[in-house]
Amino acid sequence: MTIRNTVRVGLLLCLTLLVVAFAADRRGIQSAPVAYAQSTSSAPACRHVGGTVMTDFGAIDSTTTMGTATGDLRGAVSGSILGAPQTGPTGTVIFHVQHHWVTESGDQIFFDPATATTMPLGSGLFAVLTYPLHPNGGTGKFASLNGGELNAIGEVHCDNAYCSAGQTVFRYSGQVCFAGQD
Image 1: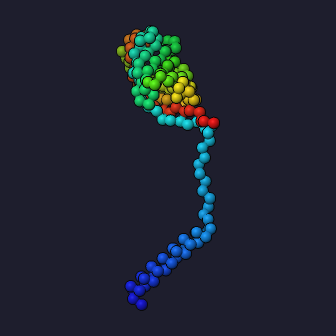
Image 2 (image 1 turned 90 degrees about the vertical axis):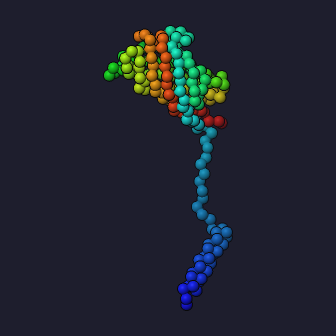
Image 3 (image 1 turned 180 degrees about the vertical axis):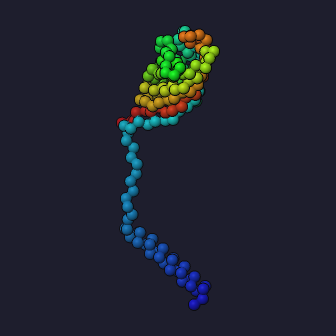
């Protein structure tokens, strides 16, 4: 028997085994059942978002900023400082802020009061160290918004001790979560 004949016999045997395997599968030999992911309609659906915010102090009153938001939540945004800034641990300065956000389509996004922890850099400039934002509802396409968390980093420039004049710039990122559909 030559090598050529041996290869032919080997290929013929492999082909025969493949045909037998396919035939056996068609006769009802079943593989293990497949489990598919199921959607629970009441589970929240979260979406990642990000963009920037730039505001000016004193645009509305001496304790409220107003400006624009870009990115996924683009529109207009303002933040009202809730009381005088407080001294925090290790030389930080704490600002308590209530946000007001209106998207470019006119939908509102509601937020819990936020706490911005900053580090003074001198000349009225503050680096924002932590600034978690918690959305809790809204109108229009944000009517079923029921949570999530955004984090912001950036700078605040205050022209006086109570930040009644100056500017802010932030980068926000995180997620917003919507109630599932029943």
